[in-house]
Image (cartoon, rainbow, N blue to C red; front, top):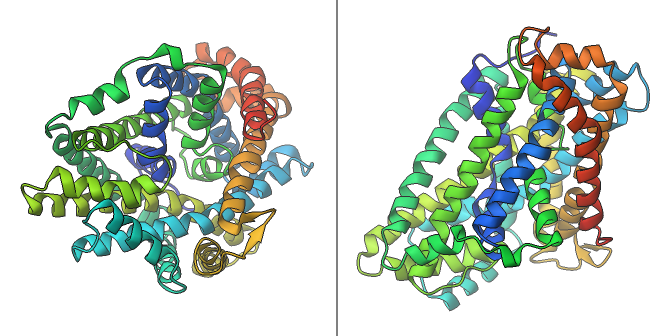
Length: 450
């Protein structure tokens, strides 16, 4: 069966960066930066991207491109059938679980885009809070919107790598960036907006602690989709001429740029109206509708347009991530069971939709759907973010650094000895020693051990 592949360098960068850019860039990174030292946190975060993120990305790229197979087959092929193949299975399972509960929040964004178009979400804080509570607790509406988002993702993935994923990424990512820049300009032009800029960028090294460093390390780790098998899967569609290290650097720069621009979009507007941004999803669905209402009260039409653009931005950001998570499982069923791509995509769509329904109910109409005292959605989030992602990424680093023959790693990293030879020793040291230790620290921190 002939495999798909990316048709251009820009397609590789935009599609892979799209897998990393998601809702966490829009609200989690800005909040963490503002609360943990502003520019000091950003400096630490960038250092973590260089220290952990880029070597980790290149490691997953090497596995995927060398094998030119789906994640499970890639680890199996490079390990000679040894137990390392289960690292690939872990990534596929992780991405499918994430797709299921992530689609719930993505569905909320899609519904809020529709509500913004209808002029239903702008109002004071009490109205915004009541609107979200009523919608999220409804037994049908969140389910319908979440499944609609999965189907939207399905329509892209089923068209294949070049006609579906690459083409969608070439459209979605530029539109996302344009929307973000327009919203940043609108936000920073408000009276008193500079207080929000200062909140984000003024260094406050008194807030920097060991915990803050680990938080920055964890944010870098999760922001780049390490451990989901996404990077390995996408790299299997890379051409042999693709330079892995520069591609990883470009993806990391784009991902970080979008995270920082998101802070410039949110904080100036919030501080302009005297609202202290909350963490978590309440920032997106409760705080910001009130911010839009107050900030543009003099010209309601502008507030209406800004609200639409913001939720369109969230939908596009979520879609670039769900496409990659869906593709991981689709590629697996297509290659391992020789199923047509369309049927493989439906397997993942059905499984993710069932999980989406249960997760949506667990935080709404049927709150008794719990595991270990947590709603099913929170449990899935905890399981993947705190256990499965760090474990998968650490095992990949150990696999690339210690198990795959050194000459194979060298051949992939340098494109057959044609480029970047002087950086190979640094990369190998990072992936053998630095990355596993850093990931272990994040892992233990997430579990509350340190």
